[in-house]
Image (cartoon, rainbow, N blue to C red):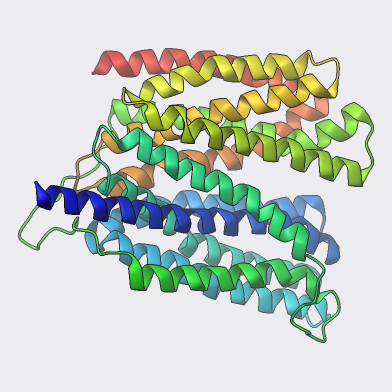
Length: 410
């Protein structure tokens, strides 16, 4: 009994530490998303060129996340997590150096674009190790009954990082606090500060995070994740959820500006308020409803569907900004249920010895969603500003069908 109590305390402490690391990982990605358009405009890149950098980064995440998840099953979560954190820092230094060459005019045009692209590919390929390792670590230190709760905390930490990233960028971008004698060097300040934070996070992991006990001895066999019908349904659910969410996120600024005729400053401020509210409401649902919920994680996704549908209808038919605001907040509540529900379902679909592979494969869905969503949104929005919201309504009904089919397999 005392041994169980001691192990529970260690797991609780580990989970708290992981939440901090996940926050930093999410924050690092958010900082890049916020600064890349600003840096790209400084180098006179077109929107297509800037979006290409972002899309290829997402593609690398899709490609390498399953690999890092499987590797964490073999060599341990801590080792792969350290690879991801240190890889982020080192590749970010390459990006910063490349961007500095652009700021002083040493490299320009297509050559600069290619250099930055290569550095981003390296960043995404290695940095992708952090998420499956940390997600599998959460699975390691939570029981099946606590899995939804643990993944809820995972999602909450992710959303907090998403909020803090823009705050860091807004506070530091343009400030040359390091005194570099390079024109517009202040544009790189948020990325430099984020690299320092990630360095501290890597040191924290190395010193304080315990080694997990999931590594098998050489004489033991490890079961493999099989892409069976059940897993295909699960990944399909994730792709739908994250594609719809990414689609909304990517058009929010355009929608606000066109709907209310705001100037750039008001558009930026209002977009930050709406997206921040979405993230905040997701945190609220993840730290309240999800923490108390002990049932099937698929039900969390099912509970989110009415919220998603209601939010879209509120946005489409909103006569004023207030109803639009509540629509976005409602979507945040739904996402706060759906995201941990999906991750928990994927985790419970695996054995204890292949959690890394399971979470790594499950995280392909967000990568696909955030690669496809923005692409679709541009096409749909060019036809009608409400068409993206109309387009995703049947996707939510499709979720109901897939969840039902998945339950019939059980």
